[in-house]
Image 1 (tube, rainbow, N blue to C red):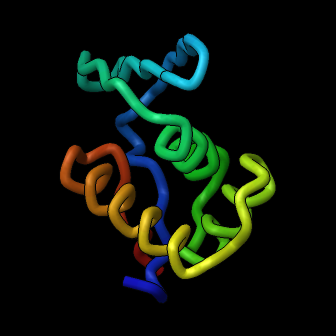
Image 2 (spheres, helix red, strand yellow):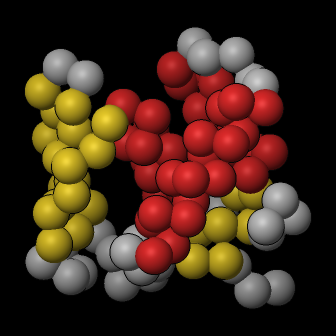
Length: 95
C-alpha cells in the first residue's frame, strides 16, 4: 500500500458542506452522504485534486492542516484510505 497511487473513483462527484470542524460530503455519483472529520475531509479533497501516493498525501495534508508529517499521521491516513477504499470513494490508480 505505501507505494500505491490513490485517486477518487471516477464515478464520484462531491458537494461539500462544513460546520466548524465537521464536514458532510454528498457524492452525486452514488447518492450517498458521508459525515467526515477534518482529517478525512482534507485527505479526500487532496485526492479529489489529483492522484497521489501515501507519502504525497501525508505531505499535502500536513500543509493543509498544519499537522507535522509523522508516522502517526501516516497511520491515520492509512486508516482513512482503507475506509474510503471500502466505500468505493477512492481506488488505486493503475499504471
